Length: 127
Length: 392
Ligand SMILES: Cc1ncc(COP(=O)(O)O)c(C=O)c1O
Ligand code: FES
Image (cartoon, rainbow over all chains, first blue to last red; front, side):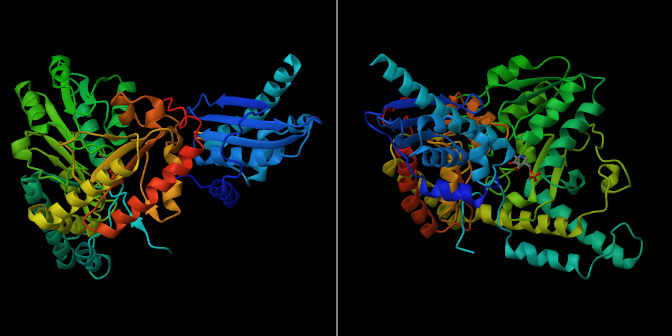
């Protein structure tokens, strides 16, 4: 079994923001071509373009769940422009590192957030 | 340390106290190198030969046919490379199954690079090797068939006797990796028609780092480890004396235990309880491996909509040790080749979980798993995007 940092285990245990947002303003559905894992990120955005709520659903490993959990925490309360700048490297750093084989899992979290924001923008422009 | 519930006995087992006791003198007092000619060394040498007799008896072989190795991996390497290199003027074709342990698979892949041709036989949905495909794949230049006795992941028992007959009728050497069979089902090399057979001590309550290869008398094989004149020039290296003594004792105990219906029934009963309990309490679970032709300590399941590593860690929080063949646990990020060979799609293989019991497993431990697992599964399913849709 791989060695995970305490912070990863903490996030995996708590699984903050796990679940679905009904009537989400943006949904980012991403999949991992490497191992077949899937992550869906839901966001709620208010009129000031601030992300008021963010949840995730993840079918994947401990690293995928921990990075989803942390990423959703990071973007909550942030403006969407700011949320767009979140990188997987930042997520990995905040988690105290990830085993090398598990780096790709963190890419999923970054992509999921970005896709959810893009989805929100698209939906808004159509309104 | 919190209480460990160890249900990963196909990975390794706890050493039997009697085995440990038998070994200790050879780590302390009787430290002579058995190659010495003085009495002190000869005494040790004698004990090694006694252990060899025990291993031979366990397999219904003669002591002459037993070579001690460093474990299952070395036995497999020795058997396969040894036969390949000794018989290459006869041919360069080797047949195996697609569900072998990596000790066999990667050895054969190495030989493939050296110019040998390898046929990897398919298996059915239970993991049983396709016998017709085997018969068809035998060629004039086939020198070896290597098919495992029992599979480590799913527990399926292969029709070794039948394969042995086919090999014999076609004049092809037959090796079986019996690492997971030893101690779990009776092994009789005469009845099985095998020419080479691998076992490993730590899989049946013996020590780690010791194993044996049965080589039928008359089989043409070359050594893999070159050096001194140990093991009748077949395997160089100063003997792992304590390990050898321990392996001998482990074989003796395993022979008794196999006849002990109380031990057998208890393990089977607990495995059945675990299997039934999981199927009752958790919906959408698939049991892998053959329903009957399966070693009775192994339960391999796929829990749909969740991933194996996440469930392993959830169990680990409660001190429960199990294993998984999911892509995320593999390091190579591919699901286990065994599960794929059964025809399971990647998403299903993702939720693989293996429990393997031992003679030491207690009913409370199984109860604890049945108490913990459904909640852990539900927790992960609640955050799986596919659970609500049931889309896999
Ligand atoms: C079927 C099988 N073959 C070979 C091995 C390798 O044995 P060892 O760990 O003694 O090298 C194992 C153990 O993982 C096994 O299960
Ligand atoms: S998501 Fe599969 S390894 Fe992390």
